[in-house]
Image (cartoon, helix red, strand yellow):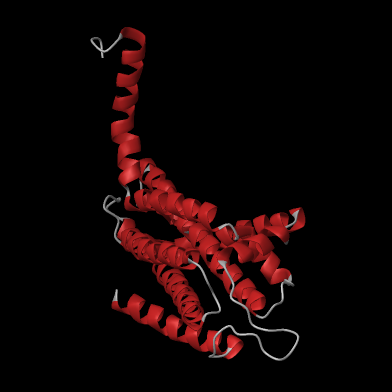
Length: 273
């Protein structure tokens, strides 16, 4: 927790320094030249984000996400602890840098509107949820007895050695667990590109420019803040239950009885159920 807090603070300092170096220290007042600094609302950034999208951008985005998730899945088997720690620290650093930049821009008058504050709080909640999910992934509430040794087993004897230590039911548990990890990194990818989108376009719009390069167009796939917030909420709640083993326990032991009771009630009424 302390390391996570320090990384976030370092990111915030970096974001403030970067924001001041790109926008300056003064308020968003017009200058003598043709291009001048203006106060930017989140709606302006959303309009530019949506307007810059294309089907080619969506296809490119899906390709990058697919490759990213595949790499994460394979790397997780061999470097579970390292992947979790590195992923969490990277997310917290990016959040800290973005939060510092947004806070400085709001204070200096480059950004305007309550939506910036609300979305900043949303990303703060996401960062806190990321810390919880990673903690549960490292020490699940329900897990096979040999799960804590899985990384050592794979690194020493390879994937083919896993059946000697895990049962078919254990592999089923691991499938749900890995799905939760993938959802966590998918949410992290979405959150980081969303923050990148607002940082890049917010800076350009504050200087009176609306042109976006390729990186801005890719990130604009996540330019709708409230829809993005709902996706992050769904992904992180699902990841929480999947990585902790809670969903597996319900799916394997409770759901069959609940499903049987439901069928009996539908066919024969509550008295038969």
